[in-house]
Length: 232
Image (cartoon, rainbow, N blue to C red; front, side, top):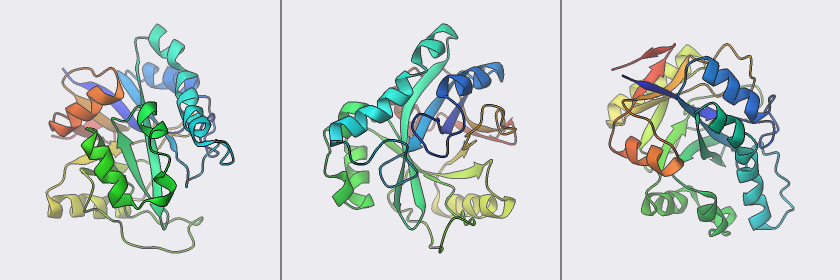
């Protein structure tokens, strides 16, 4: 038996581009028969809804509060709601980070000053897992394009529901070339998105928090969901 998880979604509480409260996304994915989902709101350099002028610990608590806003609903539905982050490391390129709880982010207030490789080292040292989100995306809001930095990631998002077939194909080809596993992501911002049920990953067992998710991904126990199908 496979358990489906969305691992790329944005809430109204944590992302300026989020169009739905997280609780509504939880209900939508539960209705689509998903076992769980990962909130990956835009982090400090991205399209965040958390005020950047707050003290560091308050900013980090803001991301976690977005997650907590739907925890009661998730628990009632027996839905594994998991905390994650989408970090923009420059030139509109973003990585999805799993396995880090809010204490990790609070304990690293120099993140705005370090590069993506140093951040990746810290994440990996703490047992985290990194997938490069939509590595070949180029959309109208972007002023320029650069190739993704992939020497520090554990996987590539080879299917992003919001991206073009061409971009996804390039991501898949690069993952195969580098011998990296692929993840899927709905990149969901709306509770009525047609992408709900079309992307994510599948696991042969349930995971209940961000650390269990990272452990399962490091073991390679997941399969990407592409166009609603689990890809072996």
